[in-house]
Image (tube, rainbow, N blue to C red; front, side, top):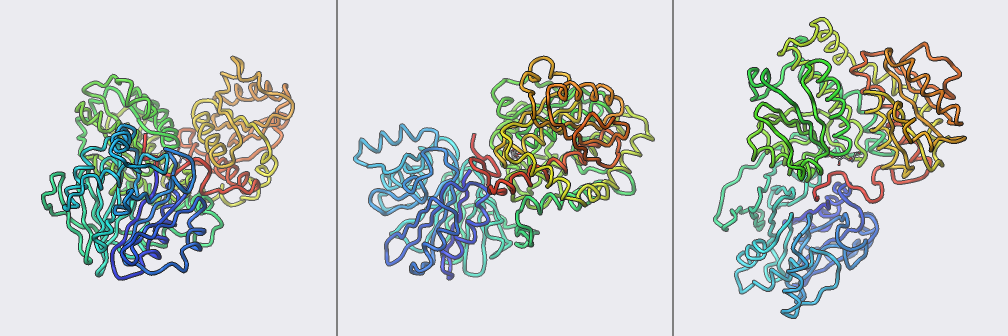
Length: 604
Ligand code: AGP
């Protein structure tokens, strides 16, 4: 899931491309590159380090008014200069940057080789400029179309032709691409954060559409190259929203934005103490739901697990939580009165998008919870509710998770009200708790040194265990993922009750355990379980809002404010986010851009 950007206008293209790539770096950072046209030739600079290093490299290169840029998440071939983008045709006439995967590239490569083309990289992308060149008999757009018709898989492309140095061509299928327009200049980008500095007027390219950017204008064509009109929308976001604003890392900024995120998300849907959603789904349809399926990936799936607990508790409707990459190939059992809920921060995750297409084809009712407006999942969904987390830049999702849990809790209460399946007083109290939750979150954020001290003590560990029962286990899964994905410490989340059936064999002297307990009913069970791991030498940090925990049970304790058990994950996860953050800082690792990861996974 790379990031691409392109520019045609009066400015020095490379400065526009570099500032855009810096905003897109969270999409992949294995290598980067830009390509411009200078004196009738391509000028290509590629780098296996970060954008800043590329910026130094091109500081004194000649000015150009057109160019494309790329930041890479390697899918085909290692992080080398040869595999970095842009890729150029053998005859140096066509240059391309690509986000996506060409599934039939091997066959196309063989076909092109048989026609004398040579390949210098291991990438799937390198077939594209050569394919366009193969079909270019003078009508460049026809050549681009012919080449696109040959491609299978996903692609968002920026294409420049040395013989037409004022024109940038864009094409896409199953990979996000937007077009922006300014005064006498135009842009393409994988997402609008890359060009917000220059324009807030964008249009979103649909599958198999083309855009031709030249002379400050943009011309759109459909899959048959017939001219087609497209609207431009204004993006209601300031460039500053994607800045660190004085924080050392986006992740710490975003963890501290949990408070305002909850306030904005909850106040968006609670009007006069009533939960209001603008859904096309009717009360009748909601009343007839037999089964709910929550489909998502990674952290969003963990938020879905919280949804399962509270929806089943309040509505007694069975909820199935599915990992999207499995759901899409398992021929899922979906019935007429089922409801599928998709959760995604980016709204671009390929596996989740594919599941949505499957559910849509089957005619099953669905709704989506997304954070990024105008994203693919947003535009494919009739029923959407938005988390109000604002841009989330750090690869490790934090505030978006908290907003997703808040929203799914609100939806559970809303559904229970319609179905009259829960005590009115309890629903009122839960709504009130969510309305005031931001204050409790702020209280948890108040003393970060507590979390930093603990994080320092585990930063050099190789293994960690996160233990919980019920909802606490679902939060343990998220806490464990946060630690793994940024600190590279291997960690396992496990249900307390499952320990004796195997995993406890891994507990020995000095093994670090983070135990979570926010349930009064389960407290006794949890205390015995903790004693079992303590007996094998484990060092236990207990995160709890229960007061009667005997001291000898834990080595360290982090108390969080008391809240209704059903809502506790919103508070419990914050210490886990901060522990992962500070452990990573302690190890001197790149907090916002962990190795091998990218913010939105737009390939399968
Ligand atoms: C979480 O920190 C990760 N970045 C990852 O697991 C993420 O949650 C997953 O890729 C889903 O992304 P989405 O919410 O944008 O669909």
